[in-house]
Image (cartoon, rainbow, N blue to C red; front, side, top):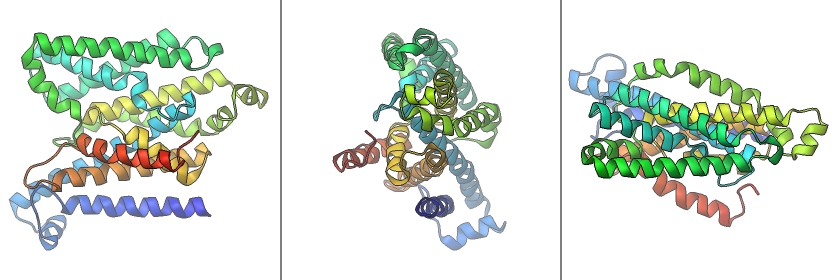
Length: 326
């Protein structure tokens, strides 16, 4: 009953935040003016403003949910409370690909940036799996080490490209922080399949993740295939993280902090944690985007800055109170 009530509360809070997102932005708008736009009676300028907030809100829901579910899976698979989507190299892989595309083609448009980011994230995860995913007998340590090695190499590559081609940095520096500004719903059509596949895999592996949390030997004795569970979970986490990064760039702390909050509220059962992470991640990122638009009106902050400033101290408080998983 407690979990059900919290889930309903998260759903109501998310719905209210999404509605609020349509009314709040970098320029103050009256409630009656925005309401007039929503019913089709607004002026052209305000209509264009509200129309830009609708895809931004929807994409914020998708990106936040994807990052939170990805982080939940990574923390469960690695049993590492500091685990987050970047441990698989998705963020740095996407960044390296965007830098490469910018160096070759010049400044990239929104669609081109998204395509390059998605390809780079997927390739980076494939390399990490190829280097560290074969040693299932030794658990996830080789996988984590492979992710660290690949990330270090790609970071060095990014820094070298930025130093050698200063023009690359001018374009890349805005994307690397993470932002929902300028996103369009048609971008989602190119990412719809990996998003759906990743979500279904995450929901489908929840029961096996519960067994994995008991330890490899216990999970095997219960009849679960530990290696397959890890592989499916990693694929789901990688697809969701790649989609989120392709849409909005590398956004920090949502995939790290939200899973801890969900764990504190729902306990260890992944059958509750994964659906709750969808709601919690979406709520966190849409709320952060509202702050990014309103804190320094009429200018905007990038949402990645807000998540970092809020997520870091929030997670620190949770750690001090012992609310994070052990």
